[in-house]
Length: 151
Image (cartoon, rainbow, N blue to C red; front, top):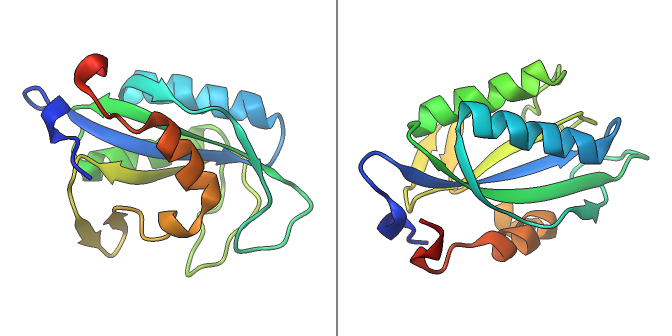
């Protein structure tokens, strides 16, 4: 999934999936995007908001999801740390572990980072489950950078 033609110097294109199923879900998404702009980089494109049922666990709370395309100078490891810090600042207290998911105020997943493939124990890019999730793939298709008009 090449995006490297949009890179300039040390800038990279990353696609982030954002979801919320607690509180004011729309405002949670908007706040996360504001914090991403502050801490990670310029948001180039944003999908529409999508409603979805919980995936991988049972809950009475539906999700609001979006995907953004973001330009960043952070490394993948720095990006992971920044997304986790945003989640923590916004009140997320639990991360999903070993496929056990929970309701959450905010969830930020790194979907893609340029055309890189990373396979660390705590960081896998492309996101290994994204193709199984319509709530990721539908908004991802909306923001997929297909030309240089966004650079």
